[in-house]
Length: 163
Image 1 (tube, rainbow, N blue to C red):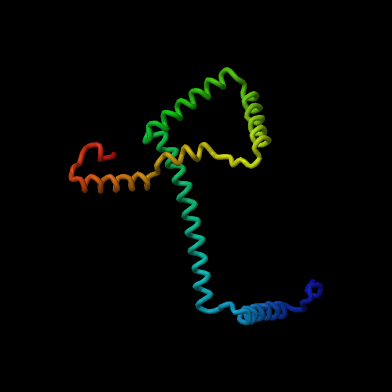
Image 2: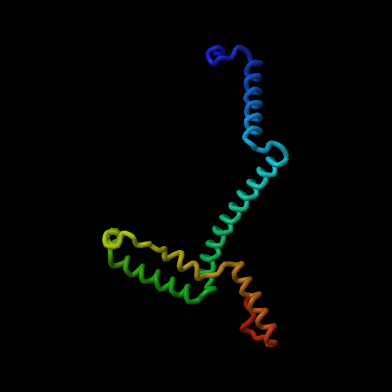
């Protein structure tokens, strides 16, 4: 089997791989790539940027979850009330109209919109709704801003204190 792949002994495999590593090192030096301390710094920078992007993604996902929780906790009363009205109306519609017909009408509407206005940019209503609900860091920022305003005016009322 070793002869089939061009290797006679295990030592020759090690020697071939060592030659490949030496070739890669010499090629990196001739192309101007750094192989010393600078290369390690570059690798560390890429690790940190990847870690930062992962952290931003997790922060965004947690923010979306917090916003759904705030809708359920009635932190923004108008949005929560509107969601309740929409759910009650959807329940009433589903009671009288079959889900099959609703899906057919929804699909026809999507094709109609695409056919008459092909360059139209579709928006996501759920994302628009969630953008109006604050997450925990945004609530903390609002508290700090509101506290600064009350300190400037010198008057502090119960409306300025958020629980």
